[in-house]
Length: 360
Image (cartoon, rainbow, N blue to C red; front, side, top):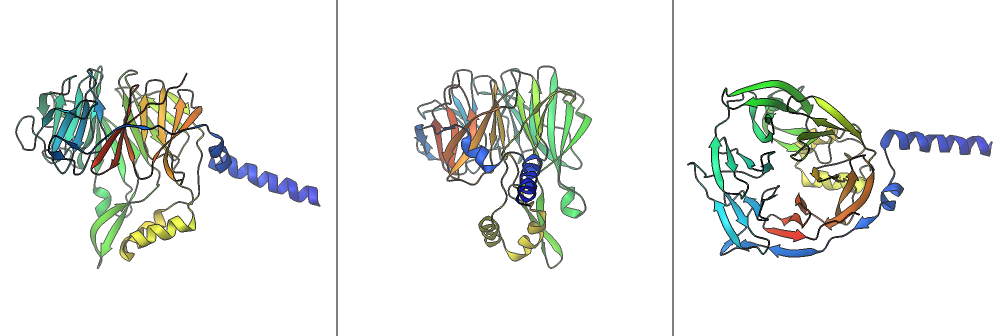
């Protein structure tokens, strides 16, 4: 009888592991690296940061492009934190309203979508303003990001139709974009992280992102001329070409973790009752495998959802094998990864450069 019970327990454990990915024990066994800060930067000149963006970029000469949403600027600083240039607030050529993500193109230039002015700014390889254009109108929403391939442009669009239709899920739309013809072509649709609609007296009053929920992570890699697309509800990272066709896939087996009661209680406390009513039903038993993706060279970095004292990133090779877990301060956000340093948004007003991970 004991043998039967033991076999049953083993079967259940194996089945759960196969269904849910790696276990907590697997997570603990991954070799860890905790980089140390090289430099902490809170201001440039007499200008203190206010609401730093979520993505930074490194120019060909090593300067760093650092957006500040509230200051309505993109600062160009050197590795010592000295100001080398900036894009300033406004609506004219080379001026910005709200830009918080910067994408490097296959041509080495940098592309920024300014959602307040509804335009795309182009900076050269040194991070200086070069040109801009106004994209065609997207009836279902607006542009989120733009990816410059060697042989064309792909735009990421977001729609707000889900706000008016409770049965409609939030989605990401990818298109080939023809600048001269101002046309969106060859649509692909991917699931996005859901938002919980806020209803007050029966009317829609807003929406809140459902924490640790599944969606699609996108990262353009200029060296490979491919857009990496990871639907975190599955176990494959798809590599897309400019025609949005999948050219190959990378299988990944990532650690997963259930929501704890303490985490759920904390989420409920952080939301007003009307928001929690719609959010609670959208929260899954397991947290998403990854919250963000960055690709640097031959390595894929995925931000883990495991609850620990640090923000944990898993580093994988192009075969999907997990090589390291990298630990950053709690509440921080990695904004770029290079061979010389790692950009980290420590909080809304503090940026830092950390030592790089060196893998043999």
